[in-house]
Image (cartoon, rainbow, N blue to C red; front, top):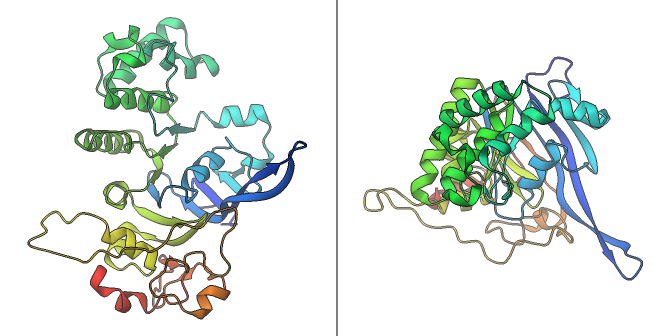
Length: 341
């Protein structure tokens, strides 16, 4: 990712975000939580890169750090080739017109004291865009674009359902016509019946506006529906990444296989598969295990896995080098776990 003219709109290179653990009256630092520990990927203009994994794996921290809501411990984040780590506050403020975020909880992310008109006016006010009349017209258009009537501008967040509140959050995210939107579990807090409506809305807006998405979720079925490429995270690292179709057709990491085996089968009579149930708990990111972080739960781990950290490398036989996996037994996994795919 160090090419002069990159193919990526957003580049994340060896990103690390370690939160300090403090103790005692003087609050001395006694350790670190390795929330993100060396993550690299890129998001092209107009595409969706899905980031998936269990709760606590660090995927939300990746999104917030990429947006510079957190200052990273190490690594680099570039947007349109510009290194964000060297920007001052004013530079970041200008850049954020082109990078926005949709949060997981639409109730918590909307100011309960402001009505919808005031919430959607805020991006324009911060960046000094348009007159009052122009902003009102723009806000009305935004509400219609996300499936709400302009007449709701005077209402407050508590007067809406969860799906409607998320539509307001989406309207706020696209208000300044960004190029990249980071979607942090945008449907996980919604009823299943509403999830598909919000996902279809996001896809329609992507096609209409040419948006790129970094789509963060824990549900592989949802991620497959919207993503062009997918990165699977475990304990602060990406353990497998590939095009969405290829990843679902031929996963090479045991953790990916386990996640996929948990996806409900639409017709359990016509097609059945066994569930790969992982034993034990996810290790603490404050005290990650030696070797491969997944070896404590892996059904095919060997002694080498307990001693040596696997590198994220191309899957054997992948000429395009588009399918990468961090597993010492990647070439054996399709055969060893064939019954769970």
